[in-house]
Image (cartoon, rainbow, N blue to C red; front, side, top):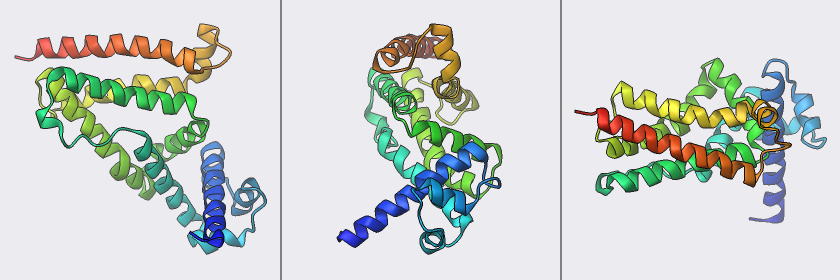
Length: 218
């Protein structure tokens, strides 16, 4: 990559980061291209058209950037699950959950990403489809397959899919309800020490849930 290419990539990333932040904070319709350019360090407004074609193209680029980022952070899709035993499947589920928790609580960009995602998931459309097919469907399906091995159940059943949603939902709360958690626990912040405490509770909940579901299977 040349110096010029590197500079262009940096500018593009700055604009995307600014757009994710403002779209998440204010909403798509309430955010102007001029505001995004200013938030991106005073970039030229024309750069949005140059890099993304339009404001809507920038919105799609934001979704694609989030999918790429989250895919690099979270464990893979788990296509090699058939040879796993129950304990190995449990360990992989735990690793996935902890990766989500680490990202959502310890990575600064997660606040902007979560806000952007919540708005887009509330109004399904093209951007929702990008996030769903590129990230949610694959990762949720992977955890469902692991859960099926851990509990000797059907990975495609409604019960399994709902259980995995419930499992991931409790983790996402530590991002969405972060201020509530901090106030209730008397924490000034949620850092590595606090995340370690959360992981200890999640581990107990996960193992108990797996044991209960495995026992309930015929």
